[in-house]
Amino acid sequence: MLQQTKAGFPQLRWLFLLSLMPLLGSCINPPAKKPLVHTQVTRPTQPLKINKLPPELMIEQNTHWHRAPPSSYNQWLNEGSHKQQVNRYHNYLIRHDASRAAPMFELLKSARDWERCGREPYAVPSSELWDNLLPTLKVLQQLQDQKILDDIEVTSVYRDAELNQCANGSPGSKHVHNSALDFRIGSENPDIGELEKIARAKYQLCRYWQNNGQRLNMGLGLYASGQIHIDTQGFRTWGPDHTHNSSICPS
Image 1 (cartoon, rainbow, N blue to C red):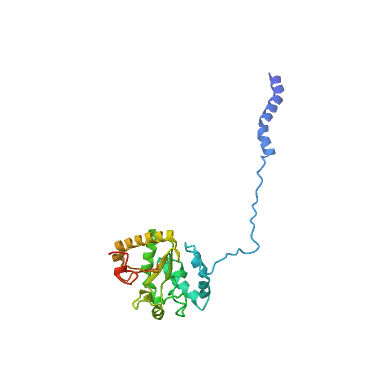
Image 2 (tube, one colour):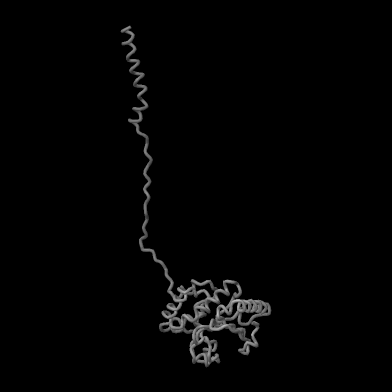
């Protein structure tokens, strides 16, 4: 029996070593590691440039209207301190949620007879008068939000007393105090189809005045020229002869 045990020992040792081969193999040949991926961050050779529009151009690009400022406005804007005055006024309207009624260049229109009177087509009222226009602008915004008015152009807002007199404005005109504005619905020379649309809009405008005018202290005037006047300085209405009798809005 001793002889068999000695004879079998080398065979057992060999089998034991074979059982250790997987473990030894993993030590001798470790698993390959995944190659490291190096991400290279590229930096621009020059700093990025951010193009910023001048404030006076941002004013018009931030609105939802499709009308571009006329060349006369751009020329006027570049004269003297007009840019600074306009930007101050516009920022004031933004802070008071009253900048959506019309493009800024329309809210600065003076009287339609400015040229005949030897004056400028645009004017920034003094800052003491800015508050006066806020209620009127908010009424105009509400009329547009409710789809009562669409496709309008503001044609006259603030005018000083001398210009108002020259333009045959009423001596007590609310325009002098920067609390009224005039606008037109549609084009300056409407065709028959557009006239029907304008008539419907005026009817809806009258209904709005009848239902809300007293609460808003709203004045509404409709002229033969097609111009429409609104203010918030008294509940009243008038027509082409500047009296209540000719108004198309019965009270």
